[in-house]
Length: 113
Image (cartoon, rainbow, N blue to C red; front, side):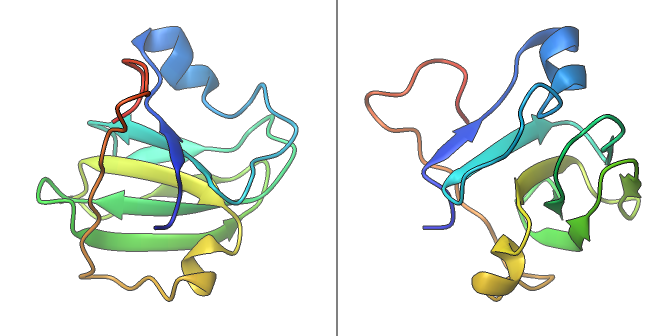
């Protein structure tokens, strides 16, 4: 399991703020952006790994250690983004072509994928 607590922000404001309100992200946390092919880290206070997925949840692109103030855009076939703590992709040896799977726990609220 790569992350236990992956949140899918709701609404325009939640999606645009993403992790900007945070001062860090824990090793077991992530942010899922459905129907997204690019992100920015302008105003963030920490680096992240960015995983771009296609509709089959296959990894099509990985941007490791994206520092604050950067833009990250994937290939044309990316439709989802997962933001993770910097170093997560290396720690779990994530590669393009790998598939991700999301499981909603029974105790999760409606904001998780």
